[in-house]
Length: 441
Image (tube, rainbow, N blue to C red; front, side, top):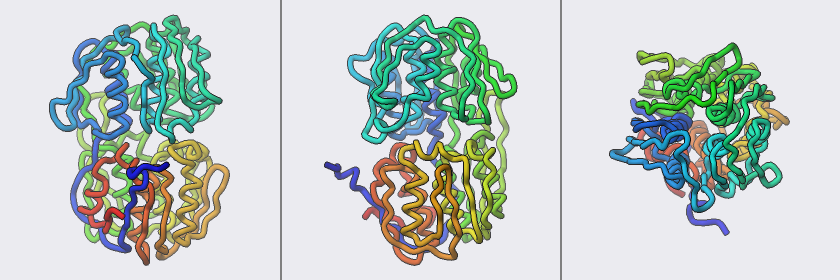
């Protein structure tokens, strides 16, 4: 039976304009990693700009169950009192990672080399998501991990004597890369991960900031096992993936330039900017100074209303845009001409099958499209129909179709929006402040 939260929905008025200067909540990927590395480090890690969303709070609760003391002295401020690499203790119950796929996959790498057993579970959506691609390389390192037909629960028998491996990723995946590198902290020797294309590098940057012995060798990352981590100060920039919804909104409907401040612009995350510029978007990035080689770059992003044109997306840009595709597809639906995305099979195994979810939404909006095995073909329309779109409990699908209402001719209802709180608490209020006619349905 669905809960009242699961039945939460939005009604978004058609049309409208976007304007203002604001920021969005902290980066989810960086917040997860800061908690985990802070827990494994010696000393107290201070995190500013922390994302106070359900996904990151699930990670904090799991670490608390493993004996890590975490303080919240102020909103978006966290102090992690590190337990050290060998200071975690067995949890009394399975660790509930909620909806956080990143947390479950990375924690598998953290827990595999411990001296105790662990079980990872999650909500209904997470329990359907594939974990085998993380489990396989960890098993190659000697880890003892079981899943249920490749899906959670993930049952881990602690194996302190992991061995270093050289693992070539079959597809670019920051989560798999990160899990192997985290396990590599404990392995005897040098663990190397080679990726076929760049994926987000937050883990490598942060490992360097925490004192790990890590080297980038072309498309490989090598980490020395047995080197202890030291506490660090982590400044989390605003989440580019959250800013993406307002970047597209401004391209579609900014009455004057929209300014998004202190946004993380790690180059392994900002493929969407290149895609939108290829479509004709007027986007200007005003970068801040970077504190060091391992620091995360941030910038203010200025966006003007633009006449977008359809493009064929280079497959090399797919991994650098993977979380932004739901709202990119909305931009494509409003662009002149045809847009083609291939090589995006990863979108099938996110919080929902995002290719299928977007295709269903485009059908509702009256947009000509074709669902492909690994992508979408879309012919843009001057305006979109209204109607009801089912987000399938996927936060990024929900937010993307809320933005689509800016070009709709009739009201748009978006169903099953409760999980927006996992990554973007306060989205609805910020969207209203920016100019969307969004209300609870």
